[in-house]
Length: 490
Image (cartoon, rainbow, N blue to C red; front, side, top):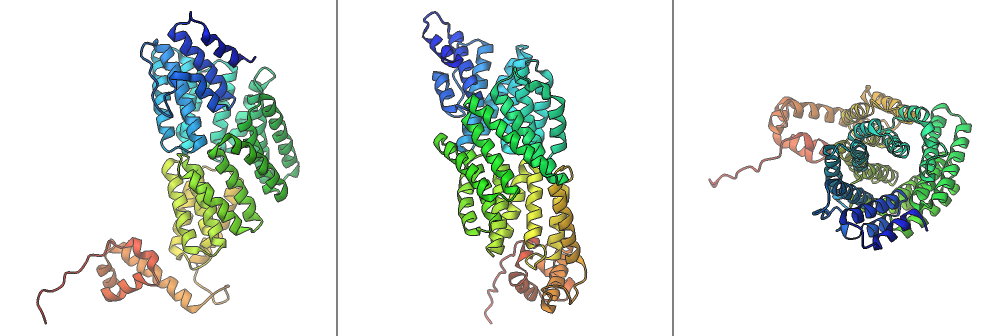
């Protein structure tokens, strides 16, 4: 019988007070959440669990006990909401955990308040609000004394740094606090340490072009899998299989990547974890894209988007949109591709996932910047936005892509030359025409009538051009007003 089962068996004792009974349930639920057993954690909470994101009834409980109940219900709501892609779950979880942290703080229980804030940060990370999550993790880590709790908070913060492409910061934190993951901590934490170290090595291998780093990363992933197996943490095991598959995809070992994705998918299908299944399918779509199996990638991404749009994880949704935009470009669905790449950037930037938004803009330039599907001004605007969004990135691949995109922009802004590939006089004239019309609309505040005067055209001629070959400039104009018909008959 394990510790959790022992705790739950104690509930049968008639001598327990309501507070003691609630605390036993909370401790058992906490252990199960830590082990990735979310359904069992829900059952362990018993009557304290009233539904996903629902506030538990804490009347009659002491304040300290009430705070613990709110924390476990909130934390579990966040995990289940992410697993099942339930819209609004993270917001509800944040409310519960915030109330818990405030109550612990008022009671002078600094450590419990700090750990509660780390669960709050986890909700922010899921939503893509990396800066908010980082601030909460830093504060929680400084206020905690317990080794396991500090290790947990550090690992959660590392996930934020990876998501924000701050790999150097992640490596520094791993080296500075590696002592937290000695023999004394759980298999789950040790597995997560190896997983994070593998991510760092994968990054260093890409930056420095050193194959031995990739080999070491594979070893670290394997070590992580061992520890997760020992802990029987199936969700983390599947996550690690997905991470290993991503590395193998980067190395061009596509068949091996599919094998690890199959293993992850089998586990997550059994667990009915829709959120993680969407991440596995996204990795598979990347492999299919690399294999030029565009139709299969498109079908795979359709399921990813359907799942991701139901939940709160906006950064992951933006990544799926970006990948879909690349696939559609390869399938020659150009207009749809342009639109979804712009949408990807908007979704990510809205929640603060700036690196994800920047990558969407890079993909827009890479797939469409060299063609006349975008005007030179649009290509330049996309580059400016990407450069702003990625100003803090530490990802060498992003910086390489940014430099390559700068060359595309310079070629589009330079005077056209007849020796350029795909040059045509009509195309060059159309580019210049679009540039001047765009300038006129901006100078006139979107008024088509005033812009037409600046260009020496009639209102009807310019309007016809905007509705025809320059439809992309429609967004620069003010909404067209319906002209009144004369009541005087001719």
